[in-house]
Length: 230
Image (cartoon, rainbow, N blue to C red; front, top):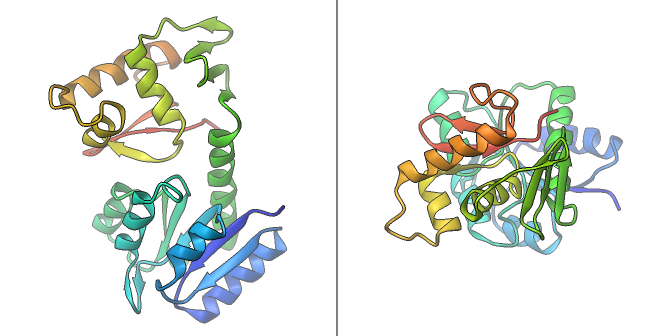
């Protein structure tokens, strides 16, 4: 079954161009010119990825992205902002609220397709059973064990909880406060500094060069993101 991409964009000519290129490349496409009804369709029809404009006639794309992230059914669906708003503050905001990518108009259709493929590949890897295996790193979510190049990693239960959570959401940035909420249920005795210490210890075990991480990336001024190296 072809993967489904939801396009939320009020420019009808651009929608036609996007739909043509996406269908040509084997995707099923849903298009929405307004936000109204889009969230429900994305949820009920199980969209695999969302291309989302920021400025829409009936609302703001940033707020719409927040609502998708708050719904457990759509929380992990990749959201790629596609917008004319190119200022750095907009790009940072789009990523901080849960967007997976931020592409400014005008854009290259070939580059957009490449980014779509990359995000869908990461999403498939995150949902493929209960094991992630790439570039020598293997994470068994069911057994709560990880290994590198076949060698078991001596992770504490907490270290695995942090790694496992981030690895199940590749490409998505989480603030330190969000990690405390997701992993420790918001317990007040966990400090933001605790997160930094766990990330440092994890990098020492899974990265070839902890000072130049390929898996656990710092999102400056925000938090951390797990990426599967190409």
